[in-house]
Length: 188
Image (cartoon, rainbow, N blue to C red):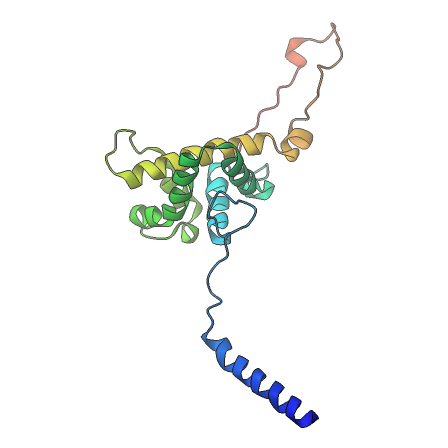
């Protein structure tokens, strides 16, 4: 009796082993956290590189060091109208194609200076452009730049370590010379 069960299990196992190589495990899953956007992990990485191009690491941390790409995706997912969400997603999906057209390479394979040129060229597209793909790239980059700066400036790192935020103004001290007050400049 146990021999039948063993043969049955062996048949099921060998049938499964035959089917496994024919399964395609290469497709990327859509990130579930952003239900209004069809964003994959590789698209999220491209967005991180674009954000790092806008605010690169230097004396301060860069945008991707602060996970600004997640802030961008949350803002687009939760705070933007459906039409703009579609434009953002389409722009993110076609950004590598735009990069290949402009710099003859995908965005992730470019050097930092070339990435800056691609982003600058995308932001310099005219509003009156008749090409729908160019308009999509322009709108995508405008949203990305806006939310990159907003997410960077509102990050815990900036608010606590670079320019500490105080809920109320500091105490009044009338004996301080204006020339002795140092202002915090956030430069790259």
